[in-house]
Amino acid sequence: MQYGEFDANSLMYITNRPELVFVRGEGSWLFDAQDKPYLDFIQGWAVNCLGHCPGEIQDALVQQARQLINPSPAFYNGPMIELAGLLTRHSSFDRVFFANTGAEANEGAIKLARKWGRTHKNGAYEIITFDHSFHGRTLATMSASGKAGWDTLFAPQVPGFPKAELNDLESVKALITDKTVAVMLEPVQGEGGVIPATVEFLQGLRELTRAHNVLLITDEVQTGMGRTGRLLGHQHSGIEPDIMTLGKGIGGGVPLAALLAREEVCCFVPGDQGGTYNGNPLMSAVGVAVLRRLLAPGFLDQVTATGNYLAECLNGLVAKHGLVGERGVGLLRALILDDERGPKLVQAALEHAPTGLLLNSPRPNLLRFMPALNVTRGEIDRMITILDHLLVSVPRA
Ligand SMILES: *Cc1c(COP(=O)(O)O)cnc(C)c1O
Image 1 (tube, rainbow, N blue to C red):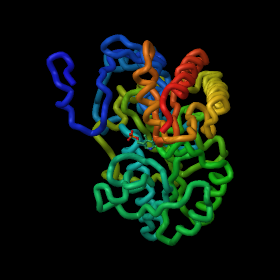
Image 2: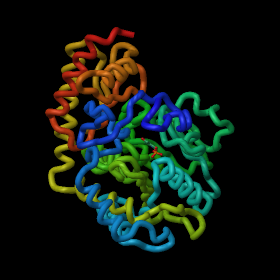
Image 3: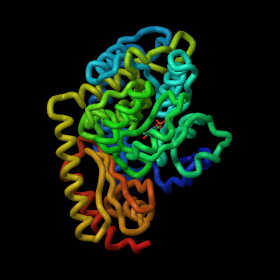
């Protein structure tokens, strides 16, 4: 595809992209080079929690860029201290390490757990993870993920990630040995198809891991930062993990992630962990702006209310079109189809005119919805109207 004097083929081929270029975004809307509007229910994969180009992120970037962009990670800067302070104040964790991506934060969690195993548990290093989980695309996080086919892609894997079944405590118990250092899971499996871990399972897991002196790690890259209607996904179950990772929403669209841990687990010494851009003031200032907005009175209650409304509307489609159902927590939801039309619906939604619609189909039999956390009921109604038409017009597969 040609764009001005340049060819898009200069980009390495890694995925099939539609032949359009987005040039502008505002709230729940994206606009392509022909100025066609698209209602965005992907939001950069649950990343833009305040929608496209929100005022507070623009202001944070401009103000911080004028003042200080990068003094080097070897020095303190104001925004990194402020963001770490806000995160620890509003969670059960004591310490924060900033990273750039969710995968990098998870790598840090894996390293921290293995270091803790070396220093506190006779060299235990195995981390039990789950079938259908997703933890990122680095070699270690791909090995930790339970995605079909990933065990042989880029073999050999990083060893030490036995897989249990989500919501099956016995399957975890069966894998615990004296080599086990941690259990790691997403409170809601996102890429796996929006599959929530039950409250009983999370509470059982916390008891089980405590009893065996095993760490509990929650990967909240997708479920953290208000996505589920609480600031953190695990807060629905009242448990306190030992380690947690954040990504996606924490930067509201810029590369920012975090690794949080309880004091007792923090065993890195100088040289163990770091990174060129980690905790840089430009991204940290955005994190502060995003978090302050999420913590504003009523914001998270509004996410819960909007999530309930979205669920209600999706259930309307289920009843009308004879679909299988709807599931999710807060504004991370999925519509389960009665066939494998997902990818065709995504394509037809993109091409819908005059207003396009951006949807995601992580599995052929379901659609996933991850709108901005401040999406309006009017925008949900418009999405539902378009999807209602498509469920009639797109041939069954
Ligand atoms: C997206 C995601 C990741 C990976 O984050 P990146 O920023 O793409 O590296 C890890 N874990 C979960 C649960 C995710 O949803």
